[in-house]
Image (cartoon, rainbow, N blue to C red; front, side, top):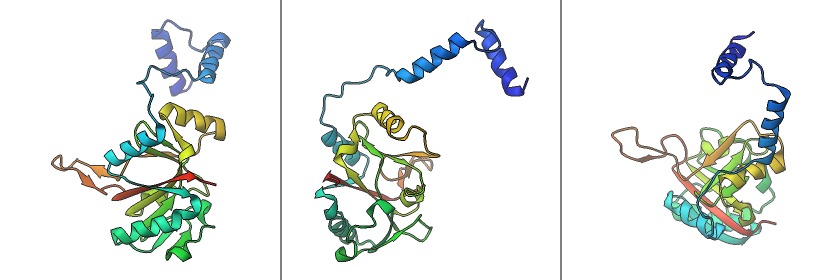
Length: 218
């Protein structure tokens, strides 16, 4: 018996169970996982898009709204100009075909490096209850693009805004089957209050998070 098996056997013994689970116990666990029952949760009788926008703003994110994905480069160009930020960015492959050059932005389709100041990503989904972005790691969705640059810009289709964390995980199980290596939840700019309990932005990631909501992502 391995050390792990020994520890688990001792725990089961304290629960008055046999050292190894039987077929019935295993089937009960499978049935529980398959059902994905939800615990009690607050009422969610609000509009998901409006709730997401409000919660994101509370977290110090900024939010813009556009009618179609084609309008994203111009909207991001306006944001960069208003913030006096660089006009070059690293970007996810999903947005490579957009007309960035016409908006005066040069994009590189790759993972971010420490010298990149602006990162443009999508999101697997957005969580209305908390104003949070959920991203999944992958070859075409490198996490570094949202984590390394000082400014993170996320393009999010309104149809991908779910009510809560429960719906976000369920959506991932349905669409992806197997979880990715990393799941990241982004709730506004990076911040810490470790030093003298003074909130500091950008300590462990982006100083800014700007979210572009798309009415029709197609």
